[in-house]
Image (cartoon, rainbow, N blue to C red; front, side, top):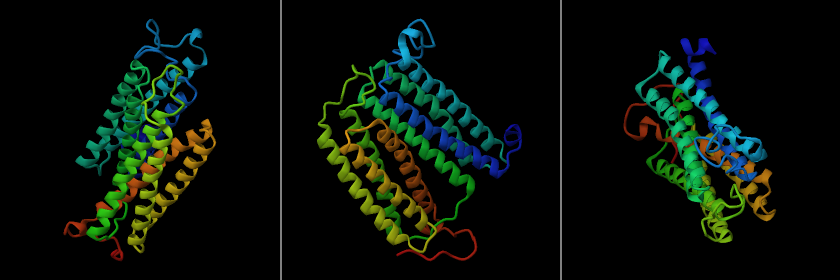
Length: 306
């Protein structure tokens, strides 16, 4: 590990970037488990666990342990993103863009911790909780972007129309993720019995969320059809499979009264969706031929999508 940071190879840097993806996704899951187990206020204040202690005491019970454990995992995440930052900065092939991206991810984690503290201080206000999750998803997306930039993945030769469809798909994907947080804020699993809800009808919001998913799937099918025969076809296929799996889990949890296991899997699925969507967007929108710049030679030229 020390060698990979002292004079990192491209493989070592890519592995650290992947570690940032995984760590940011894991913290989404553990944060969700805090809410799903009703442990959101297990440590009732922040940055201390209680007014007079940084660690939970016996009176807080298992909820205090769960919430405190999630806070401790944040330090593991910080260690991972700092190591990633060091690897990128010390990599001989690094660029200014890569260094800025790694720095943004590293700074985003403690900022995210502050937002987490605000959620506790506001008694798990659902709108702040929603922001907390969205910021984690943004860090997942940024980490995936870092992986792809370090790897130098092959680009897809696409038309301007296809690019606009891909961008629209990515925008709708984020709308789907956000609406999912709104549905969560209107229903059960608030994180604590005294936590407020956003006051919206959970059944109505579930249907609104479902409609956005239908739109996303339709757009992704369009992306795949436009990208057949290009380097981005596999990325579009992966995104479509992830959407169908995530939609199936969403319907299953809706009709089974939101069991904790399915909701937790659905959270992980959201991270997968963001990662897959970012992968597709980067491959398509980084294509130099779309801006008239000469593309780098990488063997046989990929067929151009319609």
